[in-house]
Length: 283
Image (cartoon, rainbow, N blue to C red):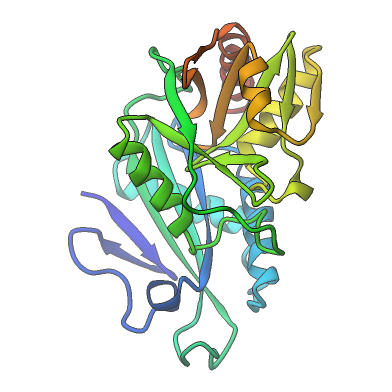
């Protein structure tokens, strides 16, 4: 049996758990984090909470002083134990504006909502088959003050994921109006050429991914150069490897973009480093 935590109330997930008038449901009025669980514990929680709170402030929520990393660590661990998740899992931690009002809220206080689910492996695992991608053309991402945060306004990503499925592909790259590649439907993007990693800078308008940050730090700590730079479609064609990163899956390697094929040598090295880092941190 799985449970959720709705602002302090532990509720069974096999019945309705969201309150009527929830503003995230009605208006997408909230921010969230997707967090990997290994050995029943949330990984990299401090960076997730920092981004969550920064996103909440950006949309003018009033945040309780009790919403600290330690507070959410305790709540997530409690929920994992209640739900029987002692090894691999994933967590979604949300802050929503309190109910009331229409487009103009009645109040700006934030409430939290936590979900946990089991995950099939208790470590980060590289995909056996390289992903096949193309570029999504129908919707362009717009750089704005919310671009770096995970808000609940997800339709561009949903549409890109649906389009990928219709095309028989694993994912699609999303671009801005200038054609710069920013993300995929659910991941940050790294292009690897001659052993060097290139990824869009946050000022370009991509998500400030927590796994993106980890991969940059791990690469630099192990002598792999990383540069933040604009990525255009021609850079995909010149690359030796492309990897996609997010907090749940860690690292996925791309096998092909149109007719171009890729290796996964650096991707395999980074997965080993990532697992070694978290094995040491969770001991």
